[in-house]
Length: 383
Ligand code: 9MR
Image (cartoon, rainbow, N blue to C red; front, side):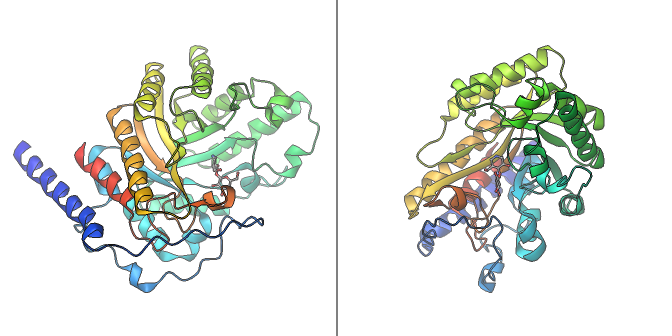
């Protein structure tokens, strides 16, 4: 049995090695230059242009049936991606690639407050339902994102001057309705997102101003009541390694744990760039200290942006960063999920926000795997 597993492992590594060598033997055309910076923000889900038919064939160098997903399932970990609802509906190759490569998905936008609760008395779940249905049809897990955030709030929440009790009730109703709707169907929720500022203090938001710092525990309590089985996460960016912000996140969640607030994990977003990213050993140390509190860790939104024009060196460096971070996650028993913020450079928030930066994901705009894809595959095969 041991011997069979060794042979199987060896075959997978050999196939991955051959696949990774193919671009070297057969150099791909130069990376598509990123669009020029514009002052007008591009809509986050642009109307898709047709995908060239030649790219619809999966890479012939990969063994049939080997994907990130199959290897992750053999390791008992989740590999996931944030999903844009438009392409999922309009572009078949988007859903095919998603279901082939990932066993977890996060709604990039359609579970956020402004999407599901546009008016005080109106909830609108059709787009979110479609994502959850897709996940179930393809035996994928769902990460719910996100219940309490300062962005993507509807005007009716932002524009009013709230009494404390009134706003607490709004938040509790929102959470119990949204979490209740997907009870048993969402494995983990990002309950509170980005509540800490880069300087380490609580961010000034409508929730902090209207309710006070205990909006955080109120949110976790409401989510727990609505789905006692769901794993509840605090999620943030720039707190992956060690430093002022990750210390502030650590102190916040430590206090919640000590006071018995139902929190089960911390999401490390991991929006990084080829030139600026935390050191793997610091991420490992951070995961270790969070695990010592009894918390799980999910890498929740990884992407590695590149300043245009993208070079082969950038792509190799990007692959290395993806591989190192997955390596750190796989080495920590508490790190159960590794989720990317998208999967194809065809659809990413990066060029809309970081003008002149792009190519942050693991498939190119034609759904061809990039070196970063093979780096993840190699890590999953090796563990
Ligand atoms: O990717 C999302 C983008 O389409 C939205 O326009 C944007 C609005 O702020 O939110 C993006 O997703 C964010 C996520 O919800 C929370 N962490 C940071 C992500 C990138 O901004």
